[in-house]
Length: 391
Length: 139
Image (cartoon, rainbow over all chains, first blue to last red; front, side, top):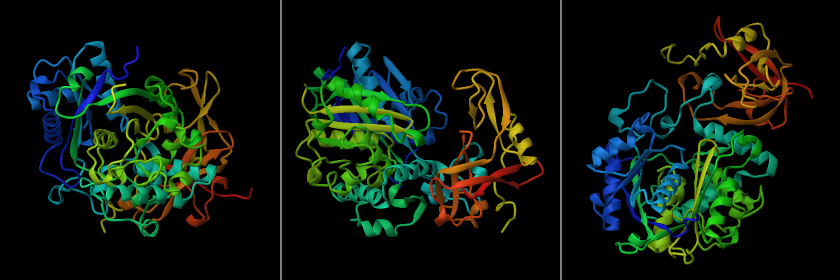
């Protein structure tokens, strides 16, 4: 059974992002749902499904979606789940919502992410010499790694990026080209945390976090919440905003060591999602790709077949993904320059662009929009093909 | 500075890693060998992910390998490494196949290359814990 065009994203809610401390993680989630309902022209009683992707601040998030249901005062839900595939979760929640709606289990589902990893200066408690803020939030070490001084997600992605550079000749300039192109988009996004124009020279001059990553190769860390409302296509057509139809969806979780394959789960997810949507890579007009690192964008472009393996650096360096290019990528600035709501960051920008609400940065061609999510160390992957057209 | 705060983290000798550290104290690098399919693996697992056998033993390896990949840490994540940055973390692919994360010593960070031949050395951290590290070797 194809679900193409059976459901649509009808509401979008995004709280203030970044160093904002006036809500807890639960408060940000409630606020995001309230904004998404208002955007759609729906009431709380219209929701009969709730899916939650808990950020770090939720802890082990036992019964997270139930806790959020209580905080929102929602009654009589017919679908509820707390989901975690890391950065692939946001698109995966939308997929589960579409499946539930198409099967008749429920009709209108809120998909929610929130986090509050950043603490205000007066709440920070840290031993001398340990980082707080962005560096501290994702600094956990696994197993023996701490003894060897390998901390955080940045370090393990750097290992895979270095291997890609060795195998394919990807350069530091190629990584920098991603950061520069996305900043050009971000300068036109009022919601972006980083809007100052950036040159390749600025990139090279920025501090190293862990080579080969400068700080500008790494995503931001943001407090905040983001939510979308997914509903049946029939209902979406009668709401406040133009429907963003789900044409295709897929997942790919390759297993094994990505430092060997130098690939994500995108090839597998693409086969399913593009098949369902009835499209090829060349039909995609706009990409909103998960960009925890500049490097992740290069791998993802390769794995969706927009270029051969190892050639994404040249593709981005050519300007193709920047404003005015043939294949716009991460048009809100992505996680590198706008805000970091895990997999919600690309979803949010895809909804804005597909509706035609992106203002100065609006791309002209947006009939076929690709969204990717990526979690762990290229471990999990989810894909959505979205369109303003029903079919 | 408080000396306790600047100490580097010493890994816990968990039951799964005890044979690894026992061998390291004797300056021997060992990896796990599956009793079902013979696959060599590191870090150790409870059950073989190749054949799902629960049988395993520890096998000495040559300690020779090459740099599979590396990163250079600049950000200080732990006070014990504040005086060390920038330092390299390496993934060594052993001649016998398994990969092991470690440090490269005796080599400036800007001279490290993927494919560089290396060999194991041992660094004593405490009476219980000796850490295998690597240094360059002639090819």
